[in-house]
Image 1: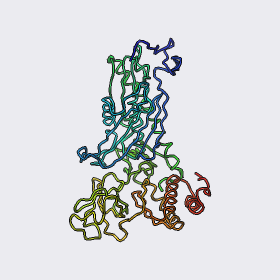
Image 2: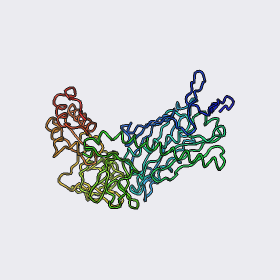
Image 3: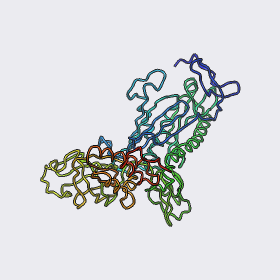
Image 4: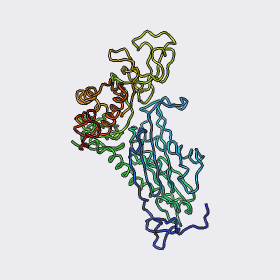
Length: 258
Length: 228
C-alpha cells in the first residue's frame, strides 16, 4: 500500500475519521478513540444453511453460515472423542477495491484456522463425537477488521444452527494510530496506523480465545489495547444476543415449542 | 403466553437448587443455557426448549424417514438428518437378505420409514424396520423441515395432517426427524409442498389449521394473512 498519501488519522480535536467521501477524497471526523464503528447483526438470513448470520460492521459486510453437526468427511478428520469445528474464510473477489484472486489464499487459511480455534473452546464438542461443524464466512465487502467481523458473525450463525455452546464468542480489535491506542481500526487506520491487535473473547467465561498482533506496541500500550478491545467485546456481545432474540422472539409469543 | 428467549451462556438459575435440564449445563451452582430457546422452569430443574437448529437429535422409539446413502454386503448406512449417519443391519429388516444382496431390497437413494431402536452414549443411533409401521417408501418425494416444526405439522391429535390428507389425495408420512414423504398426482404434490412450507413459516401463529384447509381447498389467494 502506498503510504505517501496518508490522511490525517486524527483531527485537531483528537477525533478519528468517521466517514469518507471516495469521490472527493475527503474525510469527515467525529469518531472517539474508544468508539466502535456502527454494527448491525441479523440472524437466520439463509434458508439452506442450518444457521446463518449477516453482519455489517462499519463498511464490512459479512455473511456466515453453519452446517452441522453432521457426519465428518473425509473420515480421517474425525475425532472419536469430540466434534471438529472447521471454518472456511473467504473473501469475495469484489470485496476490496483491487480485485482479490478467488480461491483460498495463505491469509484465508490462516484466518480460517485461528477462527476455528477461537470458536472450538466455546462449543460443547464432546456431545457429538465423530461429527463436524462446518462454518463458512464470506466477506462480501471488506474495510479492515474482517477477521473480527467474521468471527462475531460465525458465532451468531452457530447459535442459530442450534449448536450447543457454553456461550457466544465475540471479537474486536484495538490498535495504535499516531501514538494513541484506539479501539476498532478502520481502513485508513489499519493501513497507516502503527499496530493492530485483534482479540476474541467468550464473554460468559471471560476467556480470551484469539490474540494476534500486527505492528509494534509497548508493554503498557499492549495492556491498554487489550483492555479496550476486551471491554468492547462485551458491548458487541449484547448486539449478538439481541440479534438472536429478535430472530426467535416471534416464535416465542405463542408458546413456541409446538 | 410469552416466555423468555435465552441464548447460549445466559444464566438460567443461580440458586443452586436446580439441576440442568435439556439444552442447559451446570457449572458449580449455576445453570446456563447452551442453545437458543425458551427458558422453562420445573420444580427442581430448569431447561431450554430449543428454537434454533434444523438437525434431528435421535431419540429411542422415534419413527423417522431415512435415505440410503451407502449399502455394504450386510448393512446399510442412512441419512436421517442427524449428527451422524446411522447403520441398519440386514437383521433389522423384515426380509431375508442374502449376503451381498442388500441393494436388491434397498438401493442407494431410496427412502424408508424406520424406527430408532437404540441411541448410545455417543448419540449414535441404530434403526430398525422390524415394526409393523415401518416400510420402504417407493416413489414420491421428500422434503426436510426443522424437526422442531414436526409437532405443528402433525397438529393436535393429528388434526393438521388429517386436514392435508382429507383435502388432497396424497399419501403422506411425517418422520420425527423432519423428513416428510408424500406421493400423489403431480399437481397435488406441489400443493402439499406449498402447504407444508406455509405451516413451517407460520408455525407460531394461531388458526393455522383453518388457513391450511382454505389454502388446500380454495388456493393461496383465499387465505387470510396470519395474526400473531
